[in-house]
Each structure stands twice: as C-alpha cells, then as structure tokens.
Length: 486
Ligand code: NAD
Image 1: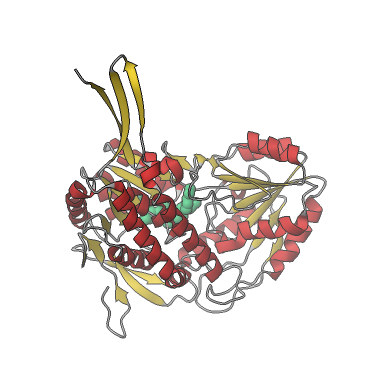
Image 2: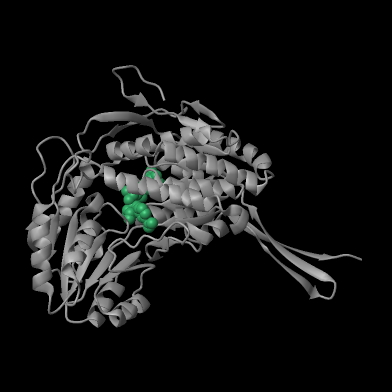
C-alpha cells in the first residue's frame, strides 16, 4: 500500500510474493459506509495483471505441490496464529469498510479462523483409500492430488470469512491460490495477504489481485487457472459458472438467497423474536442466510407481528462502530437506493408496513431503517427476490403444510428455519423443506466450517460445496493406481 499523510491509501496487488502496482489504469473509491469517508482507493486490474498472477501461481505450484501435506498444514497453523493475533485489527477493518457492527465483525473473524483450523486437518482429510486384491495379486490405491491454480472470487458481505473459506483449504491441498476480493471491501483482503506473507507460504502460492468485472473475466477464461471458487449474487454466479465451465475449469458458485422462517403458534416468542430480528436485521440484512420472509402459521400471526413490530421500533440504527448500533449501514448509496425501491415496490403491490425502525442519524452514511411488511402474498416480488437489506416480509399461512408449499416454491434454497416447541413438526419441516441449511429454533443456520455450506436450487451452481469435506474434494482430484508386482 502507498499513501501520503493526506491521501487515502492506494492498494496494490500481491503477486509472486511482492506488492506491485497493477498496470491497468483506473482506481475505485472505497468509502466507509457509516460515514462516506474515503478509506482507500482500489485498482481495477485487467487481463495483464491477472496474467502476471497466474504465471507466478503456476510457477509456485510446481514446487508447492511436492511439499508434504503436514508441512503445508504447519504453514496454515502459522496463519491461524497470526489471524488470532490480529483478530481485533481484522474485525475493526471489517467494521470500517463493510459496516458490520464490531460484534458481528468479530463473529465473522472467528468463523474464518474456524475454517482455517479445519484446513489444518488436511493430513487426515486428504487421505485416500486402499483395497488389496481387487483381483488376485492386484491392489488399488486412491490418492488425492492438488488441481494447480485456483481462483477465489469473493463478495462484499464477508470480507475476511469467505476468503478464509477458500485460501487455507486450497493451499493446504497443494494448490496455489489467487484471491480476487470484492472491490467494495479490498482493505481487509490486503491485511489477509500480509498475514499470509508472514506465515511463510512460498512466494506465488498466495496472490491477491484487486479489481472487478475485467479481473474476474480474465480469471474465468485464463488457460492457467484450473478451478474457480465463487461467492456472490445469483446473476454473477450464473455468469461465473457457465463461463468458467465453458473454459474447462472446475467451478463452485455460491449464489443469492431468499430465506424463509416458519413460526408455529406454539413457538416460544421470548426466544424466537430476538432470533428472527437478528436473522433479518443483523448486518443490515446483508447476509446470504438472512431471513427474508416469516411464514406466520395461524392462529398466532397477530401476536407475532405485534411482538416483532414493537421490537423493530426499538432497534438502534446507526454507524457500525457505535456500541449500541443494531442495524448498521448498507454497503453503498446505490445499494441503499435499490433497497428503498424494494420498499416502495412492496407498498405498491399492496403489502402493509407494520413497523418501521427509528430514523437513521443525519449524515452521509448509507442507512436504511428496518421495515416489517405484513399481509405479504407469496406471488409478490418482495416475497420472491433477494433484497439484501433490512426488510422482513410476513406471509400469513393456515398450516405447516401451506408454509412448506410457499417456501418450496422459491427459486432459491439456501437456508430455512422453523420456530416451534413441537419436535414432530420440526422433524417434518427439516425433512420436507427444499433448502440446504436448516435451522430448528435457529435463525441463521450457518454450518460450522467442518460441514459443507450447502445451498440448493438457485442458491448454488456446481456440485462440490464450500467448506467441510466437500471442500477437500473440490480442491483435489482423485487418482487410482492399480498395481501388480510380478
Ligand atoms: P456480486 O455478485 O456483486 O460480486 C461478487 C464478486 O463478483 C465480486 O468480487 C465482484 O467484483 C464480482 N462481480 C460482480 N459483478 C460481476 C460481473 N458482472 N462479472 C464478473 N464479476 C462480477 O455480489 P456482492 O454484492 O458482492 O455480494 C452479495 C451477494 O452474494 C448476495 O446475493 C448474497 O446472497 C451472495 N452471497 C451468497 C453466499 C452463499 O453462500 N450463497 C454467501 C455470501 C454472499
């Protein structure tokens, strides 16, 4: 990074173990969403910058793949120690450039560390299998080997956690890795690259290329890239999946979501309401597991809407760094405008605003007050499309069967949850809901890093999911050696 005292930093790429200025011209501003203050400028790398990173990564791969996995895991453990030492700095960087509250940011750092710890178990998880005498005197052994160069393309909403879903696992499996972080949160990615540098990974095994569409498209089409792990919105995920696959690459593309929470009349509202609020309005609704719709099963909707409404009116909206803030800013002014258009669209289509949070403080931050819509119908676009802001819709339904039918009509299938005291209903819901991550009395059912992060339907393109054993399979290819000794 370079900066004079008065100038915000201009970020650099990290390629082949060195910090370099991209050759492409053009910089983007990185403002603090809480205040609009300019934090840094990020370069818009182009195809030539991506090519430099791919060449460095390929060269590094040729020796990195031969480093024993236990030694690679030691570097990952060194990275884990550095992440722990710098956890507070990372969390504060996330607060500044993303607008999460400090508590939310700390939680996301913790989740990233958890993924790093899982990666360090590769000497066990990378093991293959062996069968003797597949025919008399002939044995077969299955081994897992690295793919080569892996690109990770990440979204704005988890600046540290999602890069850490990818880089430690890709590296420990013997690949080299190129991170193309969201151009809206490039500062935390830069801190991560410094920590990777300090952890002793050989030059070129981890590379950082800043940028946006041009950098992504160069990665998707570069013949030196073997696999692409992507997390972002549904339209971009489809583009990444089809383009990278057409260029012969292995791809996993985690996409957008619309998550349904079912609340049965017997739910414990004292505990359920805080969990629903946190799911819908935590991180200003900018979570792929955020609740978008509550399916309120009758009789009980009036009581639930009244409880939610009262609580929403109390939620503090404000700058992410202030201690009592519950709903921070959304990421950019244009995103705030998009969320406000969705709120107008909800009213236009006949939904009723049942509650509205407190007005945000005056000033240039990108705030949206939390909104609760009641009497939403399943066919309304606010019930179907991802809003990615602090907006929650209530659809009233007559039964669990009807709730399942409405939720299962969604084109997405990331997460879903049920709130109830009844085990049989919970079991029925978990069995029949068409979503990959299911909560029972849990509003954000994020799997721990040693399980896969399993979106279904339009929330995921690909086969092998991120994190857990799926990730080990994603970052390796299998080889079966069949042997006979004369
Ligand atoms: P995004 O699609 O705008 O951007 C994601 C990445 O793709 C960024 O690195 C960006 O530079 C790049 N990109 C954007 N437009 C592109 C284009 N036209 N061509 C090529 N590359 C492009 O997503 P976002 O707004 O940063 O992130 C929020 C979205 O991510 C939400 O839809 C959310 O649901 C989703 N998300 C999903 C998961 C999941 O696990 N399914 C997790 C986190 C976020």
